[in-house]
Length: 193
Length: 193
Image 1 (cartoon, each protein chain N blue to C red):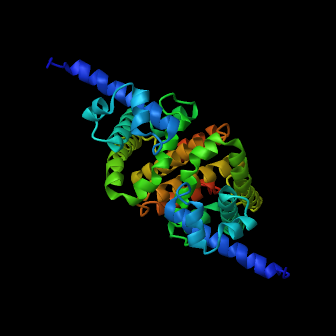
Image 2 (cartoon, each protein chain N blue to C red; image 1 turned 90 degrees about the vertical axis):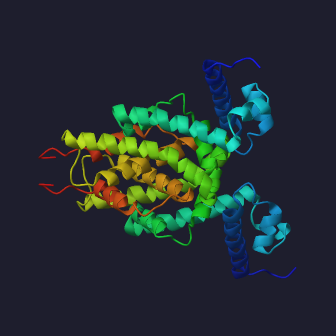
Image 3 (cartoon, rainbow over the protein chains, first blue to last red; image 1 turned 135 degrees about the horizontal axis):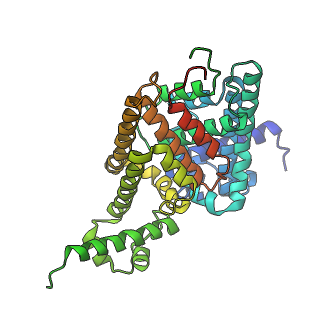
């Protein structure tokens, strides 16, 4: 057997994830069959599932990628910026892809193991959001009459609403001032305001 | 043919809607087949589709019922109360039923006619929310530095987030203070706050 370099493995993994993302977005989670995954990725099922245990693991790996990318934006610019990026049509999260997370809602609700694996991924965003808010509070930029955990849950709930809104294809042209309001809600209110 | 009274028609319609709600919640929109609808409702497909054109119309009639019920709560107590009812485990909207609206997201996104029919139903809630906010503003209870349309969209986005959160089966025990914050965000800030 030839030695396979780490670079090669990484590239192969990337090819699988990119193709799977397109496939899930195009057909939805359930209808993204193994056959369709093969076609979209351009590899055999043997090659695909050599890298990922099963379809579920592939989906969760994509969700994990998203979470890592979002946590990165959160750390630098906050969770509202993640929402602004989604609103601006962030190419990594088109509505078709966002929709897949709604489509797995039944699975999340009824399969505790799947929910636990998904929650692990969400936790990254929660931690990044909470850390950022704590730093903002220390810098005197955050209101101090509401618990940081409550503000974190508030921002996450609005994000969930936005994902749902975009995934359903509803008009988003009136959402920007809403995000301004959400951002302002977390900020320290200056005297006289 | 015997004359069928309006009462009888209404009762039959109610039986169909109640059964269909159970069926959609139990199996999800796609897997709620005509056979399963017959079993859960206890009527033949002939009888069911005498009252409703097709499965889609049945589903939208249920969504319409929900919207009317929610608009009623909104008019009296506001949209945050609708959210509090959902959070308290409002029996008319269990997570299984809420999940069906996430499951149809692809359909909503890709089928303009379906989306238009759904939007018609949502409009009732928007109108009721906006009317209530305008009354609150006249009564001096609403902040006046943010447009009523923005506040309406804000509340609706949080509702969408809550529906998604509950439908995915995530813990809701930390959501109540978030709803307090949402409610407070729309209120007039008294001097000194």
